[in-house]
Image (cartoon, rainbow, N blue to C red):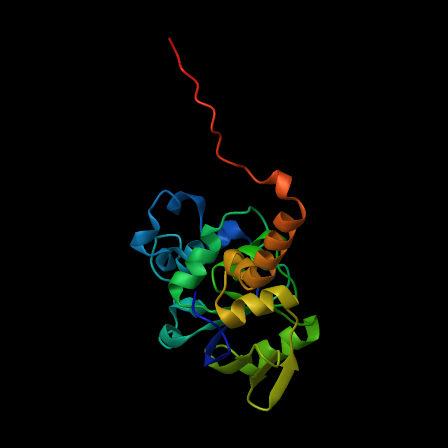
Length: 211
C-alpha cells in the first residue's frame, strides 16, 4: 500500500449520518469483479435519481470532485454489513481519507487494511469542517503524523489507533506489522531451540522395508 503522511487535496462534504455499507455500494454491484472499478458504484443510489440520471446537486457529481482525496461526513459512517467492497468503492473512486465522528468497527478495520484513513473527530469539529467546506469540494489538509486537519483558518485534531497509524504511515499490512519484529522473532526461535535441543527433529537412520 502507498504510505500516507500528508493528504493535501480537495475534500468532499457529505453532511449525512449513518451512511452504511449498503449505501456505499449497493449489493447488486458486488457481483462485478473489482477490475471494472468499484468507484463507479460508490453511493450509486444517492448519486442518481429515480430514472438513473446523475443527481445534479449530489456532491460526488460536482465538476471539481475528480481531485478530491478526502470525504467529510457525520457520525456512524460505514455501519451495517461487513462488506469490504464498501472500502474498495471509496478507494477506487480516489479517496484516501474519511473524516467522521464515528465509524462502523469492521468498516474502519477494512479501511486501514486497504490504505484508507478513518480519521475520527468530535461531533463539533465535524460540523465545523462541513461548514468550512460548504456545498462544494474545498482544499483540506490531513496530517497523519501530527494528527491534525486544516481547512482555511480552521485546524482540528483527529484520533486514530496507534497501530493503525503505524500501518498507514508505512503503507503496511498485518504481515508487515509482524515483519518489523523479524529479528526479535529470530532471536527468540534460536534461544528457544538452544535451550530445548530435544525438540528438534533429527533425520531417522532406521530403514523400514515393506514386503
